[in-house]
Amino acid sequence: MENSSPAVHQVSPEEFLSLNKKSTKSIVLFSAPWCGLCKRIAPIYRKKAMEIAQVNFFSIDLGEFPQARNLAEVTSLPFFATFIDGRIQERKASSKPDVLMNLINQLINE
Image 1: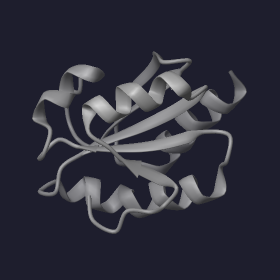
Image 2 (image 1 turned 90 degrees about the vertical axis):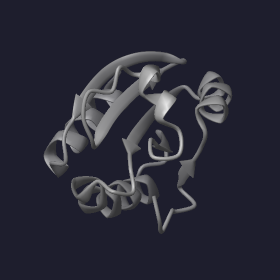
Image 3 (image 1 turned 45 degrees about the vertical axis):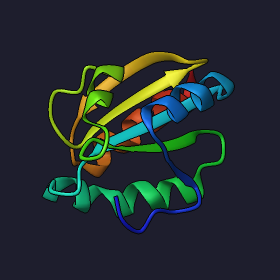
């Protein structure tokens, strides 16, 4: 996804698996360049990544890495998955900022 933020780590599936093992709490945005709703939520995701230090924010481009759908059983885009200590916690397909915030808040409060 274009305009990546330093707070959002754009990664391949392999990089994510390696980095996620070292992260206590992580959220991943699965998106694709052709996805209009992904483009709409991306700036909000980047903003939250800059504001919230206790969660690691990752982004995986399914246009480039379609096999990454298997990491979180991605059903549609945009898709978020949260992880604690490398284990998947929540999965949600949504472009709504309130859904994103709920996922982040749940992750912070775990």
